[in-house]
Length: 105
Image 1 (cartoon, helix red, strand yellow):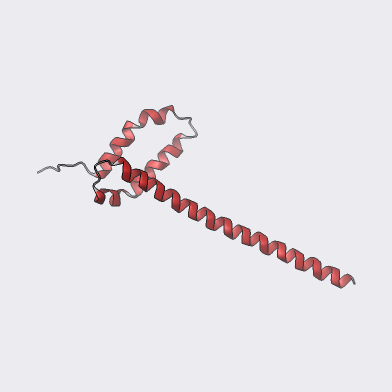
Image 2 (image 1 turned 30 degrees about the horizontal axis):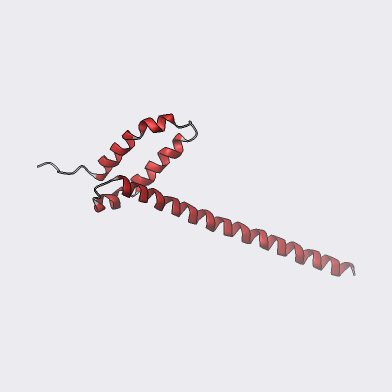
């Protein structure tokens, strides 16, 4: 007996094919970004397939949002680390200059 519903991965592939003309119309530098969005959706295909939603585009969009949230969190964490490094560097410079000015006195 065959399946009554296509798999989520099949539905996602069909969505990507429907958007192929849009992708071709994008500028060349935007096309890899577009492809990455579908990679994000494929990374969560197992969870999306369990949902068995009537409109497979909705779980794909939520998967894309989820991956972008992960990337944002990663960037925010890296930014905080860089800011802390800069602040430590500045405080080290201030303490060095204070030590130098005291030694001159």
